[in-house]
Length: 609
Image (tube, rainbow, N blue to C red; front, top):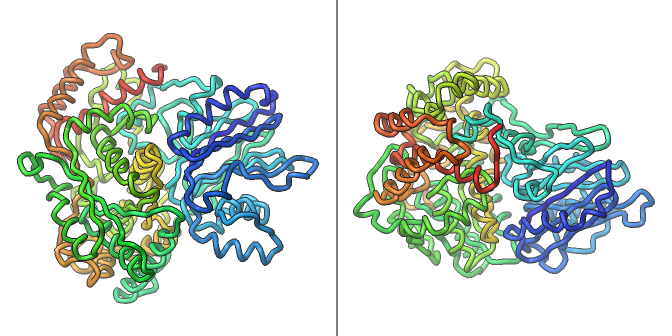
């Protein structure tokens, strides 16, 4: 796992801009604490910071091929892991390719040489990489199918800037951080954005499953992978067996590393099943016991208040599972002051507005995991694949003609000043994005109306909401030099689960039936009957008080970049009158994005245009 940056400009000689390029590379230091590299030619420069996981000695980057070609070499900078690289290596060797290292990076480089940008279709993994193809004077940017690894780019008149994180692009003076007023809705709720959107003018993400090619004629985007709807071929028993077989293979592959691997274990079904499979594989191969981690908060016994999305405390379930699996279990207990103290580091890791305590608690959890491991397993995407969230099972939210996780809950755009709201029409913008994504749903002809709607609901959740969770996981882990792998994002499982009929996903009268049935006999019975519980947050009332105090200060501060865009009375009304929703934790949880947006704009000198 690594950080990549680059600059292509057909209008000037980049060899004269080494100091800028060095600054761009340096922004990726936390993502790659083990090594650094930079390759520069007249019109292309690619930089890399490395976290060594596979072939620690041989996988240095940028990695070059065709060094003696008169037009110039093929150059790769790569972030991620390709789990089928041993098979690909053998296939490419049979085609005549000669390898100098054991790294998956070299396999990706040779795959590009063999198949060009279509190499992406051959890769199983999480990845974001850039190839400078000197022979064709083209830069090729490729991102994995689910968007597990981030990749941003900024088009310019004569070329492009790219990086794993926005900070890599913002380190170049060619980029000016501007926020268009019309993008305030996605600033205040990033889950509303389309897969390529960011709040910064001109800054885009390479969409999951997409390729962006930049040459002298400009940038062109191509999709190489998408979900496809088809009749499901199996009955329930066969479905459960296939899910079990897939996950066993996926977890086995994702345990491969030349460094220690651990697992997150919240005590919920998803992470418990992954940890069970990993622990069993370690036991089968004679490996030392798996290390597992669970986050908890000091004062939970006193302050915890159940909600629809977080009905129980995780720690007892995690402890029970760890005892059954024989893992070396590490509960990470956090205090409110811990969450506050690391906010600057967590904010700097994200480059976009923070999630507050949800970022900082994960940041601290990963810092603890990094003490004993370099790779961790996590359970993101199981809810999106198998229908785990409570709003999937509430007819009021699933029938809502809009984003189902929002329903008729209050929006932070309700806090905008009347003149701003009149200009940007946030409700219409939300509906436009909803309709845009709805039009992309792969339909199944002949599907009954309820099943068709649930297909829409799951698809919508797999867009920006899932990307947002994956982005948080990537940022907070890589800030600690930890690579987190997500077995449920393996595209083989995603493609299969997508076509499991909705009624089969609730076959036992519970959410995620195929996954629950696949895990039976391997995880504690209490886990199988436990209701869905989302990633936890602190219920300490002092945290809520501090956030509300910060909001009050923000609204009175005429120096705030958001001054005039927010309406004090509307903010107060939202705080005091808003009804609790499924995702509600407390008023601080609801209003925090206002405070974090202000801090982000100040930190990065973002001007509201």
